[in-house]
Image 1 (tube, rainbow, N blue to C red):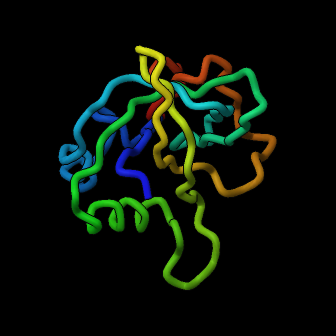
Image 2: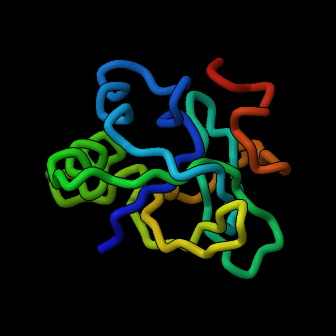
Image 3: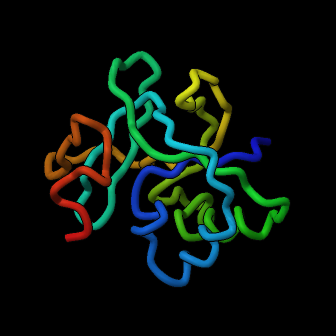
Length: 137
């Protein structure tokens, strides 16, 4: 199990809303890092679709998780991984590899979109939600 978490959207510091901001504040920043995949604007939030073969990258930040399983459990509940009723949630937590600025490949968790990307989703080609003009509509 990884002790790191990659954030790319509405959980990023500065974008996260209460009450999750207190949880995110407990994460220790490790620095900016991309992961392979595509990023979509899904309206009120973005969704990462993993694609290890894609040349595209999703930009975000890597964080160290505190030694507190309750924090990750709370984030899982928020993201819907897994849902209490046993159905698939909107997002699911998976293992990926992020690349830090110094070139180190770091295994980590990330929440990926767990649905088919619909025709209303907009590809964020540069992969950076913070730079996206549709942010926090």
